Length: 294
Image (cartoon, one colour):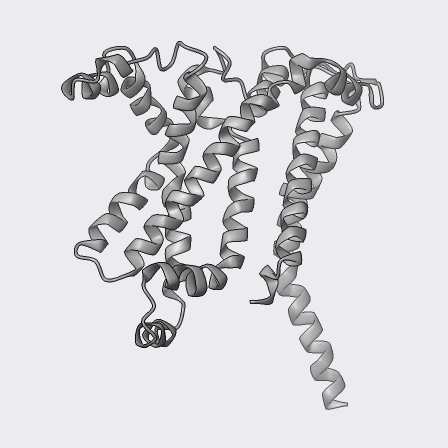
């Protein structure tokens, strides 16, 4: 009888502790998601009481009208940038995990951009890339005037400039995650490698990289998801003009500028499905390659 009472009390206690988080999760996650899916089946401007149910017509328009889906081409720039971002973060995390003079200073320098407000960073780089701005002055100082371009006006360079800003903004997060994972590796493993005559490259390939596969998977998922849903930097710096319009910027403009909330909701659902699909593919790939066995 005592065991039964204890078991019942334990269940009640668990339910009480879970009640508030579950209510918050349903209120601020599942309920808005359900509403968004419902809105995606409507022809509605988001303000009037007049709503017309049109089923999957919004989704059909997305995949048939290149104006809405072609903006995913811009995401390719950010996908390429995410690979460079992860490579740089892993490189610096590996270097600074060894004994190097002044490494704490470099850690702070690399992580500091992530602490800044994204809007402030966008304005900083807006002046950095403008004509006769910081970058042009830097190139002139070293006699490299021939490399000066219309960084924010030339469609060949504008998205590259946006991606460079994004790398500078978010690399610190990937760096600190990689660094924490590397520093959690047992130091005795590195000591044994030193006794066997292993150099830093051998330590990276045979010790560090296999030990942080799960963290690498996490950073890759976050980077790819962020690349697909890029918004803040291109919106603040360019407003989506001159070929910088991402899928999220297109969604916002469709909803709040063009007054097509139903179509914008369908775009948001498609974006969610794409991010989930990419995440599942990555997890299957890492699992197939033994990433979850560590």
